[in-house]
Image (cartoon, rainbow, N blue to C red):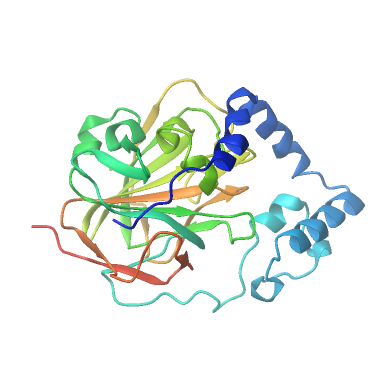
Length: 294
């Protein structure tokens, strides 16, 4: 487990107001604004955002604000072919997203490390599904944070056959580093979509965690999953459908940025030794080695 910085008074100052904000109302407004097709407005917003966050236009398939129908199309922009080669062989685990490692390491029985002095349970994260959580007891995890400037499509770390999905309702706290250091059980409190796959390394969970201003989460097999925001956990079984995604293939996207959490079973994956918290990642980059399940 890589060391984690302690929360500072500035972290608390920036994070505590989030408890008072109407998370879903703000995100619904963001949904509408980021899909406005008024040309002068969306072009100006894209130019401002690209300057503010130093967006790398050279990697994008389309490179002018005028090429996008609205801001969200720019935010979830497609990369130019060849910009994210997929490294390694069939059981090389590759990064699911561009971003930075928030944390990685071993799951302590049912507990995942969030930040210094803070953790949450896999069972909570998976919406109370204890059977699915048991697949990852004493396994491995990695949390990847996507900042606003990053590419916001999510890709497969390994080839996987979709087993089921769980939609879990919740709040929409920010998932920025200062918030993860302050808000207890953050990732188990926010709205999220869990996708469970069978892979060459056994069961794998990809958890797409929503956040404030993350107005929608999509998958390639179901399209828009949220909104609408629901009050109950919803489980969909895909075992009778042959939905298999190749290693490195797109599996979903965030319409505005957030966090992806990977879960693997006990001794199923060995992370590369040089990976530590805050290390940058790119889609397709080798991050570990999968082991065939016993």
